[in-house]
Image 1: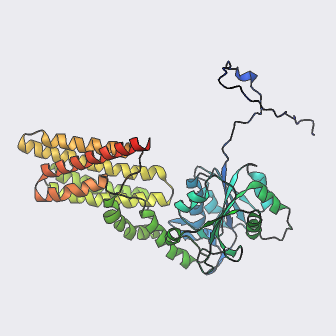
Image 2: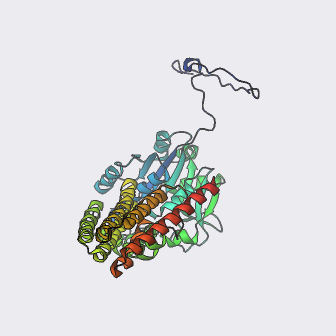
Image 3: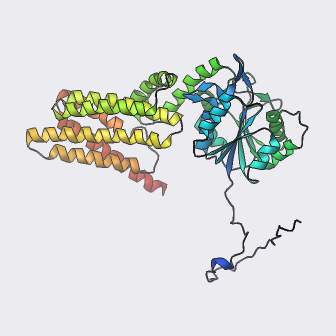
Length: 431
């Protein structure tokens, strides 16, 4: 033992039941004692070695995908799954790869480059869970969340050798589908191998021989775009499928059947033209301002239609922000839709109140806005039929076009209040 190392004795004790002990000062606690069941850190390991099949000299990891590079998208997936550290395993460094790593490092996750399993194992916490992403893998958040869960080693597999997700055969039945959950000691095992080993294949073999659990790639995950692509054209075609899957994150009926199809059509074009998220927010703000001005001047129907256009723009912006892993901006877009509904309802109610000298429209608008705000705050899982700001805007629009604004306000107030009652009841049942 080195002179500067201290061998702390390990100890344990069993406390008698129902016996009270005084609280000890912090100085009396044993330094080095570990809390029970400490949470293990999640780290990520991305391979960025292969060249694109249709662009010699260009790494697959640096090909464009989703308005960024594939590497940045993979880092975004790992960060969303809870990874605190991401290592990029490289064979050679290119300016494009360095630029992609620098941009990815701006996220709330530490990103470093490694060249070997030995270097990777040295940079990770000994008890970390490591989520491995294959070179050229495209996948989505649900797949990452499933593989990032607590548990022993696991391999995502497919029993279809012709699947676009199949990379390397593990046994007579299963092929690796691009994601593995391993431990840091397994990285250390690879470091003991000869220097000419293939890092990714060796890691896969070590995980398979350790008895890692096989998690089968579902048909839904495959339809959402999970696959390995090694060409720019393949990534471009896969981009559309992944973007379409991202728009499905909004589950209520209005978004699913009205605004999601719009976002699905618009998002690939916006991403291809690298339209920034703030541009959509600004555009939606201009349209919303014009719509609210129309309502203030008494053109409630026209203003409601303009508000729907602004909502479609905001919903598309939320999907784009989700793609880029900008959770704060995603929530900002969604809260902007609620604010837009509140402004439409209150302005429409104010106009009717001035014309009828009745406080009923304003009361109905307040009930709808407050109820929907509370619905958004309820932690229970939202159901498809529940009210949402976009659904309430859709509901009030035909009433406004027909000139029955008070009836429209009554409809949205009842709808929002009924949803709130269902949400509260669902929360009680869950408790």
